[in-house]
Amino acid sequence: MTDQHNNKVSSKYLVFTDLDGTLLDHHDYNYTAALPAIERLESLSIPVILNSSKTFAEIKAIRQALHNVAPFVVENGAVIFFPAGLFPGYEEGINQVMLGRPLTEILPVIHNYRTKYRFNFQGFSDFSVQDVITHTGLSEEDASLAKQRLATEPVLWNDSDENLQKFTQLLMEHKLLVVKGGRFLHIMGQHDKAQAMIWLKEHYEKTCSSQRVSIALGDSKNDKIMLEQADYAAVIKKADGSYLQVERSGSALYQSQQVAPAGWREAIDALLIQINEV
Image (cartoon, rainbow, N blue to C red):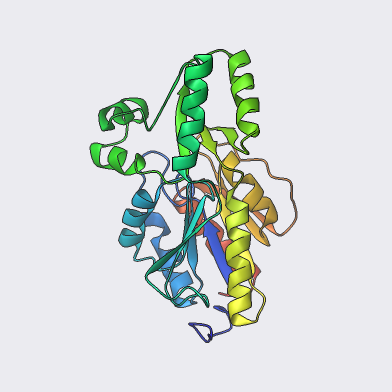
């Protein structure tokens, strides 16, 4: 299979981006200010690969709004989706590669421990759509999409720190992680956004027989490893004015002066200048 585009840029660069607080406004999820940069990347045939904690159902709606046809990654690197014909051996429909653990394997484990040790927590699988609205502030439609999970379970922990430590150790025996988010703990397999980025980069390189350069954009802790392992990285300024701290420096790291989505456009414009693709 040959590269779907034949110019030098498409054979070289891949953009991996977080959504909330990076490409999308932290408060209202607007992306209008980023559109000129998205259009520039499209004109250069550089794929914009959405790599988010959001679910398949949530990202599907966003991709449609953005007219995005690139691969995408859901639930913090748990599952990679890409169209038919992009990579050899994946020829039918939209393809799915699971890097995490299916939710059907996670839920019996955590529910068994909840019963056995009387841990006090509730997860999205316990919640009604109205419960999700109450705890997240999402609209009814978005709350419904957020409940459609494949490989991660957000939970509200209403128990002691001591019991959380015990719960975490029990899950480690099943190779499951407890990752702290803003309001929720996320129960998931041993995966992250960086692993998904590396998987896609390697498959692009195998398919096209040429090296790819990864550009990653993010703002939160779950973006940290992805930003540290990408060839170029942009940290988008948070709504409170602070920045995620990443373990890298120099010209391969850019910090936006603006918040999302204007900060995303600013970062892309700056990185395109840096790599001489203006």
